[in-house]
Length: 233
Image (tube, rainbow, N blue to C red; front, side):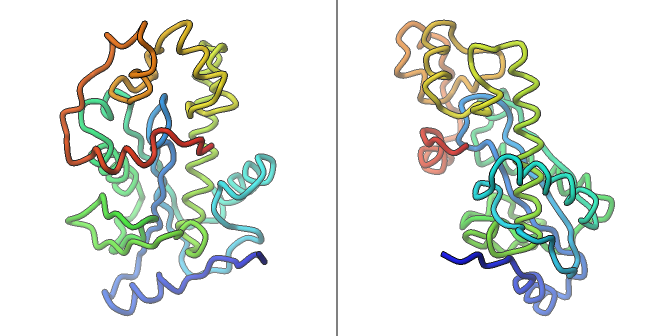
């Protein structure tokens, strides 16, 4: 399928319908991981032509993604990152943890956005933000694609740094997502302090099931069930 570069069409629509002059693209990474934070990037790009090859971070090679993230961090008008820790995910559930991380990212921008383009079909932000959800926004919207690349590279770097103290888990390669190496280390060594203890992977580890935390936010079960078992790295 030929490459279709992202555009500013959604941003232009938001500007026209809401009067917003500052529109942020928001994307997350880490929702389906067993370990590490969920990370959200908010990026403001204006209406400038994007760098060549910009698209969803998962569609790029590691080399290309890393180089593009370095370029984007100076090309965007502004960007900021927000994180929710594994402990916050366990305590709040994923929907609330995503909202917390996204709010942290948006509020860390130097200027408050007047509207937000959110990747996906679920608006986990809600009031007071004016939100437009876009399925595959990380491929079609410039600001969301930029946020996707920056979030992915920054979180991968963070997980590689955490992995220096937990080499058996392969965090430098799997970024905390499921993988054979990760699963084998869990069976042998049990969860690290960076693991999410409310995740269902513990159901398959009898030796460590006593560590599992009961999720206290039922509204998040459906959302989480769709992401936590995939090999999305």
